[in-house]
Each structure stands twice: as C-alpha cells, then as structure tokens.
Image (cartoon, rainbow, N blue to C red):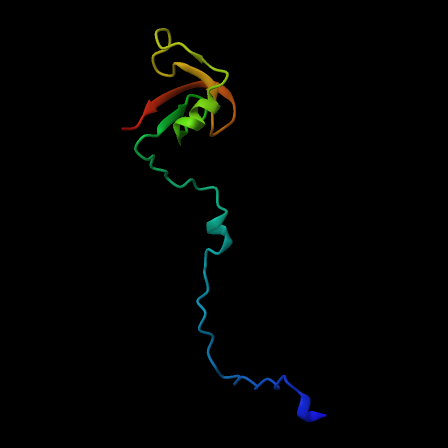
Length: 102
C-alpha cells in the first residue's frame, strides 16, 4: 500500500534559519488611527467647508447635489458660510461654504 501514497512527507526545515520577515512597528495602528490623511480634490470637484467642525471635504458634483437636498442658500445674508445643508464630514446640519475647484 505504500506505493499508492501520493503525498510526500514534509521535509523538516532547518531550525537555525533567521527570520527574514520585517516586523512592522506601526502595524494595524497605522491603518486604523484617527489621524486624517490630507485629500486633494481633483479638477471639477467641489470643496465643502463646515462651519461647525471646520473640515474641508471634496465632493463630486453628483454627491454635492445629493448632500444639498434639502438645503438653504443665502449668499447675500451670510458671506462666510452661505449654505445650510448636512456636512459630509460630521453629519450635522450646519452652515457650510461650497467652493468649486477648477
């Protein structure tokens, strides 16, 4: 019956081989940390700046339309943050500034 064995036994690895894998000191901490990464908006995008949390979030025009329904825009009364809509960063309804990136 030993002629029908298709799986060869494992060859033992030498025990004195050094570990060649590098240890990542940051590991998962770097992936899941709370440090925000700077996002540069692409051409044709808009940047929404929140008056409450101060975050600047780049959005496409389609996402801006979805975020601004329902909204209120008062550019003559409020100069700094003329639009009342839900902030994409913090999720609160607040006054925001919308800038177009050319």
